[in-house]
Image 1 (cartoon, rainbow, N blue to C red):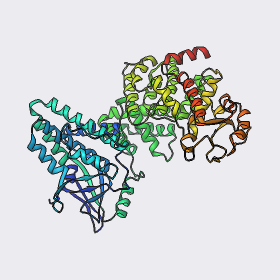
Image 2: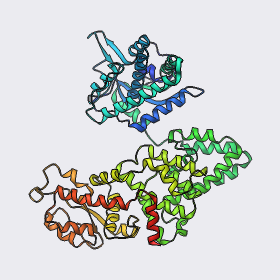
Image 3: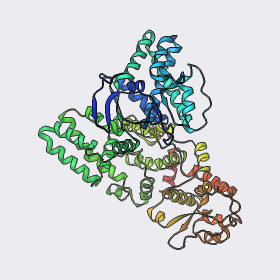
Image 4: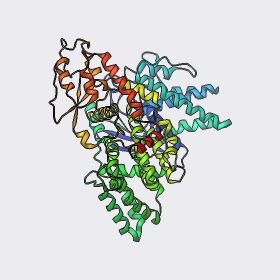
Length: 581
């Protein structure tokens, strides 16, 4: 078919078009090469993709730009090799399969077959066989092929690896989304699904770039993913505010400048953008960076709003700076006894909670703010240990809670706990994860061990570790990085790596007083451990041998301590406050 979409660039080496993603899938046979990573989108990314498409489909313009697809010819076949765009192509193909299946379920066999022949499969004249229009890599190809060729209701085979599980999960989510469209559309469901196919065909825009060879394609890919863009969201927003400010531009300019000074951004443009995103999320709910400018522009549309927003940036930037620095003047009124709480929070280095904390710092009473800061340390550690801190789910919950704080619906830490309970790991899940966690970050390992050691010694508020205590120690593995097999015979050859970073294999040494122990035998290392000022380290020295069982037992003890130490319910933090008062 002749290409009718606008040509962005054409040269003897590179050809680029703006086109519909469905149009691209329909007109090209595509192949993900062997060296490309397998399908990697998790549930959060699929939900974001599906929400974006629904918002665009239901919007006034019904258009959405999904980025650039970089391709290059395969010299050994008639397919184009996908250098960048696999996740979007595979996910959109799965959405088309879900639409195909919905027509089948509704008895619309002809329309289902139309989708199948147009977007899903192609007929090879030489072999007289049908083949998927999109081939994934070897790890996922057969599983994805079964999904494309399967009929509605046919169960997929059991996934054999993580990427296949992700494909299964993505397809289930998209299938459920399409079925919800059918249910909500009543008698007009066919027309609605047709509109969705047309939207994917022509209004779900991508820039299709075809390079003559892989070298050129990778150069384009690296250029497109270069983060050194000359204009940031902050630049665009500043221009927007200045235009709206009119005669009050000087006031807006001054507030903007003060906010930058508060954050001490220097040449770090990304820090200011991150601050803007976190602050806006605390006002409106979670927003991703790529959507930030559009959301800000739509939400700030008058002279008064521009001036007020700039003034609020001036205040909130000071609060945001305090969240990044335990020595900030903001914390002076909290007293020296509270400083380890702030130092610990800063040390954890998490950003997802900042939209929430910005709202809490503005609206909670002093006593509730203190309780919340104590509580969120435990919530954060639980998220880090169980893996629940990643993706966008945590930030969405925190941001939604921030909007409720600003609207007066939440005013205490207890109320906030019940709002956030779905993302705060329960005791059982936390203990199970803590029993087996591997900690590759030296920063986190040192903090976990210090807090647990203080708990083992009965120290009140042991999970709030001061900078002085933190800086006075170092972390050392009991089983060394390069053990001699004859001296560490309890561990099988080749299994060292799975035990090396286990929390139960790590100990604390006082780096100011003791040398690092190096790759000695366990009996040699015990002497150093026995002289350690840390109880959990000295416990290792009391053992005659070191083995996988010893690591498991020590880590189980740590997990038992950790459940009480990093409490889930804020009332326990309140008890600690009373005990230490």
